Length: 302
Image 1 (cartoon, rainbow, N blue to C red):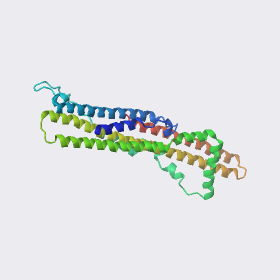
Image 2: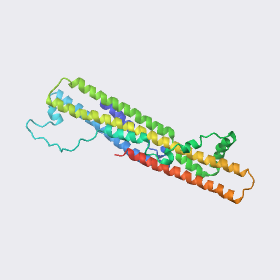
Image 3: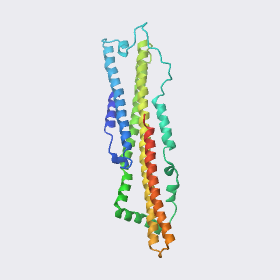
Image 4: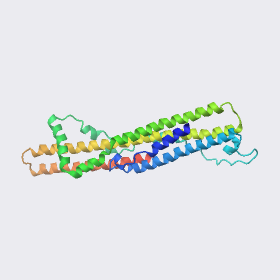
């Protein structure tokens, strides 16, 4: 039963949306790294499923008297030499490693300063009169209709938020199911073998405890992928809103300037400088986004 439930999880991993446009063309490359994690996750799920299948088949042979439990789990004969421990430090469990990943993502140290600070967002939350707000909104729409490269740039930042949200929810559901399967396996082992103190049974339980730990590790990885996927999608949408705000604010100012008297040269130069500065700001936000997403993607490597 547990093996079949794992099989259904493996099918869900295989169905994951790989469309690069999910995170927008500008940051769609993050799915290359996440896609590799999808594949590896699927392989790990398949490995645990296969292990459970092999032991289920083997235990049937043991129950039918066709094989000894000690032979099934590969126990050495009494008195046989056993490999010496290498003396190294024990490996950290996957759950502990993933906790580090979650801390890294939640602390947002991967976000570049230009996007981590609240100033860009707060700038467009300041109250303005209704007329200027209308100019900012309508002016940006008008500009995007006339300047197609600018519209394409914002479209490249948009992606498909509903697909990103669906991916994050898929990872969350898988994490919960893997946790339940691990708990179910632990409960079955305790119920079936709790009263036995044979050496071969103890060895079998030790092997199966590794599978329980593996399932909990896979659940932790799925939780981390939930957080990483949401964080990437949220930052992309935040950057898009910031860029739209910067451009809309500039367009509104240009409309106001065009309705005023003829400007002397120094004023004209200063206003041209504001246009250039806005271009630099947009470029800085986009660069910060790409760098931040690269930092985030590295957090789930390994």
